[in-house]
Length: 399
Image (tube, rainbow, N blue to C red; front, side):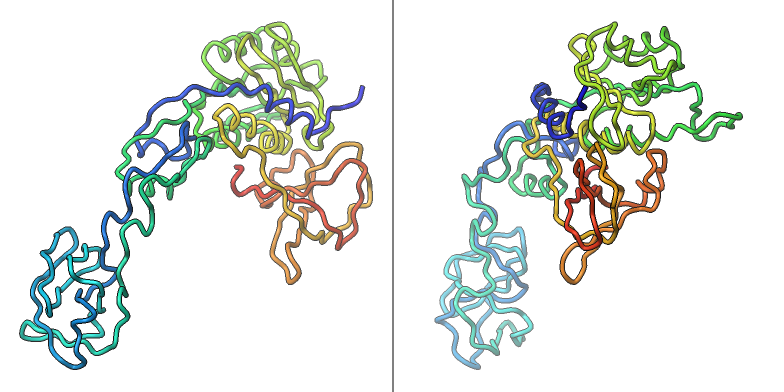
């Protein structure tokens, strides 16, 4: 039976993802949240012409070279000045509104001040050093669209408009479980045959980076009854269930069988390396992902398939990471039957992006994941020689 391609799998998963409802949050709780509606500016920013410099506001036509001008008022930021008297200047500070009658600001370093008068030492251009009303944002302007994930800069932008809360996609509760009698948590003493559970903190942090809440079910024993109970608890408490391990074909891999007993398995085994035994299905109405137990396989399949699925649930417009062309600094002489994702490091070169790969590409080598900043994509049946172009997926925003 032919294995399903990565592209076909992703298309299928995105079609299956059911979009979440909405909730209202304050700005302080909205970093990384996904907008559920378009945001239009309700006012101009800045709301009035204001000074871009500390200096003097005046009417340019009143200037006479070398002649002193009376300083008629002082306007700090936050104070609205009076209409400018003809032939006078106003001492003004950065951000203060320009008084009626003034059309130019002279920087203080271009002036001489003393005894209530100012002498301008330059020939200014009318309108200089004035930030006009609406220069940054015009009332009615579309600023952010539904499906956009809010960044720190976005929160600052919204605050500049006086927005205190936004309608966003409701957060997702993700139940995370690890399977394997050999697993122990960091800090515990290892007995012979045991290893530390690296998947749990890695996957939990990747889930949280998407704004989701993690329900940590810990380590589940390699036992069908324990696996079934953990899956039932996960189904009943979460919007999405993710397990690591237990979906391969070994006698101690119980997750696949118990998912089929409790619901249905819709995908299993992909034409991807690493990550072939990835599984997807449903536990009743709750979607389920079974990630491979090997940590690199879990990392890669989460980045390429689970992350876009979660983003689709949240209503994000752009779900799949972009691919960029780069020049290979390595040979890849053996064509594979599955699409491969090599842990790679991309750097700028004289003729474009250059890509090197980690010397250890084993699915258990987390050093390659820690080292890399990208995945190099090797299509099915492809070989490469140094200097050939290939596609890379940057990871800086994915983990």
